[in-house]
Length: 188
Image (cartoon, rainbow, N blue to C red):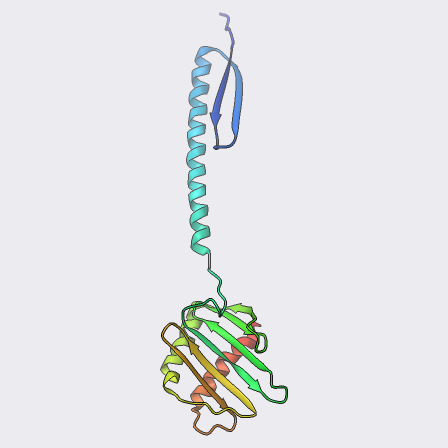
């Protein structure tokens, strides 16, 4: 029994941009088997491609963190630092409620991100600020070397300033300032 071969070309699309042409020399029964096989591969490839694309896009969009600066951030932010002394320079940092920590260059509005803190730590810091009721304090006592803590947000803009000579400052606030400042030593 002789088998006659006929030349067939099968064309199918793996992606929207690339076309792959496969040419086989087949008899009629082989042609049907190969056609079914190619159809299954094509269908599986498109299905796999769809799932891989879906998972990749989901992963990228869920992990993306929007970056801000203290000038563009509209939620709560705690600014802290010191100024004055012999040089009169200002050393200021800004902790955004999303975890970004910035160092401000002098009195200029130039900010460099120095770290990104964990959500738990940031939440703890903002809760401590509120528990100390710093927004209720009216403290503006600058000295030779002055320290400050400032809260800014949509509904709040409050700043306290003190120096080593300030008498009415609570020790808990000084400890809170040291906690904030320690963030800059370990993370910058």
